[in-house]
Image (cartoon, rainbow, N blue to C red; front, side, top):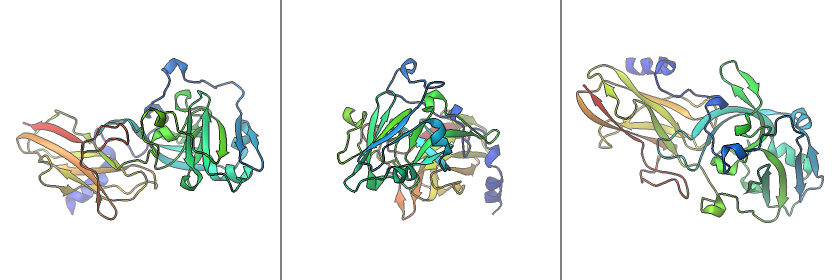
Length: 314
């Protein structure tokens, strides 16, 4: 009872816990290019072409795109190369044009099977039309949580437009999008050609944000073990924490998600006893699908295993 009420009230006071939503300034950056070769399209004429197997090819500038009906998407972007416990993940609120609406305007021909993305840096990726998430977005703005205002994407995050595909790793979601082509053939994407997953479906993850590795805690003083968890848009049943290196598990307080594709905060109040402690976390999806405990490197399908943090109470 009381412990739970305290945890509920204290989300924003848990030092070190990442917030429910971050701004793009805190979002990780991964690119195939050295930073100085990333496209910077600010102040340059921009055109997005939609072509291939469509009835009505489109060429849209940024003004035309922004004039189309828009929608907002709270979206957890994560990199397939993120290690267990890593920070190549972030939950941001974006605004843009639903990809489905764009495809309807162009009139997709029945023989079209795949969408191929092309970016200003010649990056390519594709996805089967049947696998396009309903919420897929062509994003042209990101919310700054400090003031709630939407801002242009920073160049490093894909200005002026990028693809967002909930449930997939970032490699499927090109920045600096310039062309969408409907085809009857799959295009093997840049990273898939280099041995990474073709489908890039997000694996269930959980992370301990606090306490940090090798932290020194005060024995007998209440603290929180807390962090974030995400299952690629699949619903989480609960998050469990082990304070003894995986021998026993207890249920943490799990904050309801702000949106289907938002990560979730979790927290467990804890009074550590003197000595060394090995903390672990795991997420459990609805249907009792427990996060994969096998320790795997990110290549080729994304990392698995439980985030483990060792601390000492004195």
